Length: 167
Image (cartoon, rainbow, N blue to C red; front, side, top):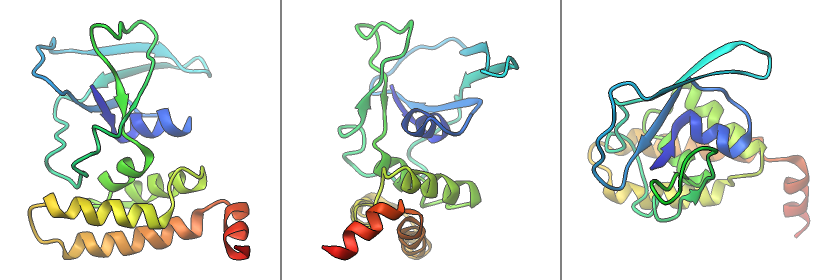
């Protein structure tokens, strides 16, 4: 199981709360209709999280090596012998945000940059490589790559920016 979207952002940054899990599977799998978990958040509020059965990784930008480069995640109560849960790498998660590139997507990319998880050069390289497998007009995605690279550069932690300037 490969996790993307807001759930991946939470696993990578500890920030952002989501109600749905965007995920895809490496093999065909038979799931019940209502995969959901209810829980209490740290403030004691009742929450519900569910698997988004409408998520489709073929409709956006995704690097061909994204799943191979994903990271394993330990989930309490999930037997790794039955299902291995993985999360997209930070740069691949950022790339998935570029085709739609709405306000929330921009904020997610900025958060990844603020946490020091992506840099503009890596994002640009990975996104441009992913364009090779993208079907459709790439002009708007290329513009998104340019804008996202500037957002990432501006959002990087100050210490990293200073270190780079002195090198």
